[in-house]
Amino acid sequence: MEFTAKMISDLVGGKVEGNPDVIIRQPAKIEEATAGSITFLANMQYEAYAYNTQASAILVSLDFEPKEPLTPTMIRVENVYETVRVLLEKFSEMQSPQPVEVTKVAATAFIHDTATVGEGTNIGTFACVEKGAKVGKNTIVFPQVYIGEGAEIGDNVVLNPGVKVYKGCKIGNNCIIHANVVVGADGFGFVPQEDGTFKKMPQVGIVVIEDNVEIGANTTIDRATMGATLIKKGTKLDNLIMVAHNVEIGENTAIAAQTGIAGSTKIGNNCMIGGQIAIVGHITIADGSQIQSKSGVAQSIKEPNKAWSGSPAIEYRNYWKSSILFKQFPEIEKRIRKLERALKEAEK
Image (cartoon, rainbow, N blue to C red):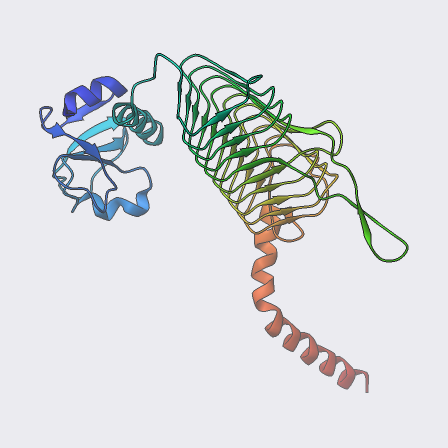
């Protein structure tokens, strides 16, 4: 489809500077954009590309002041990232198939006689819906998805290829679960024996994922030993995250890839947790906490809305002050030894 810069500006509440009738056909990255594309400048590290881009239009902030002439038509907006989100959502809607009006089940899919599938839901090839499971309305179950006995899937959910939802687990409405996510595998619970062996602790709980959650590919969320492992509404998990048994993650928290969260830890609302972070078990992390990537969280964070870094994690500013000293340790050691020698000479 084609749009003009004016049409896009009207959609996002922007202000056009340049040719309002220039034609836009697709979005593109600023360093790769060609004619007919719309791009954006939100991070000023990419400003140099703005003066050479071949894009036909560019989204910029209201206060952006070009240092050189710009070829693309500018569309000034209050929040560039939010505007990009809105535009990408619109482009995605146009490229995606329209919602189905009737339930469609592939010939090779298996749905148990006691399972229920809501109106407008698609079940892909070789998908399996087990005994007593419930799948809501207008949900997309891609090929090779497994939905276990008694599991519940809400309305408007997308289960991408290879997702596994174990027995009894629950996923709310408007969730997106990406490929090969495992929901409800056994928690890592073993009891050491006197002879050095281990006996498995039965894991009889479930996983509950509330509404509007998105979970990235290959992430695993273990079922609780008892009760529920809980992912609250609006939370976003990246790829390759490990969530252990009985963990609770609060509302609207974002966690980046390769983070591991040990059992029974409770993470608050509106936290931002970077990649490759290790979080020990049985602690609490306060609302609004921000944790820098590669940190190790070894004790509870009780004060809300603070930033943390390092391993073990300490307050963010203290960590960076300390990191300056880390680099100077060899020189500091030399100075200390020199002072010690001088002190000994003075004592003589």
